Length: 191
Image (cartoon, rainbow, N blue to C red; front, side, top):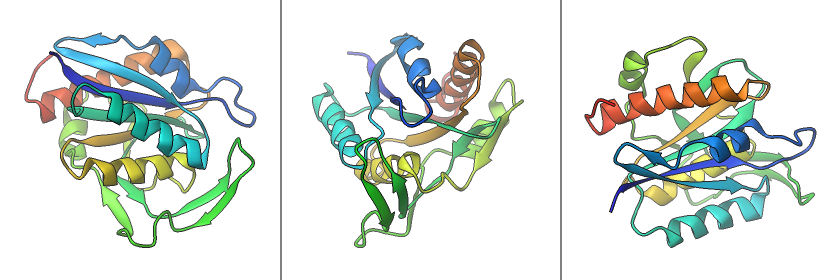
């Protein structure tokens, strides 16, 4: 059995009939060296996003070795998000508006177990790549925070924000470069 990587992106919402994170996930290869990539599109819904995420985790043959969550943002940079914050705000595609803590019983934040500065140091093409400490307060942060909590540090979870107006081919190449850097540092493997 291959090592599993879970790769997610968000579906369409608002003015974004085509969500670049969705397109990247759909077109990204399912096989990556000795890794098998399970791909899932997450609805931009407070309730359905976490239910969809939990369902795909439950249906996996084994725990993932790595989870990569993708979402779009207005920057022209690819942001490796370091922290998921315990706060949510905004309206979703189900016309539900949320404001306040994600869970009052959880910590104020969860941090990825990946060593992002080491990963960044081996990224082949650092143009348009940065480490971020603020994933916002919308669905990207919401899913990231809960995915970090659910992992219980048993496997790493990373959220990568991609430019909403990016080119699909270039974006796939950049995610490929970032994935290679993560694998090199986390799994001690050269691809």
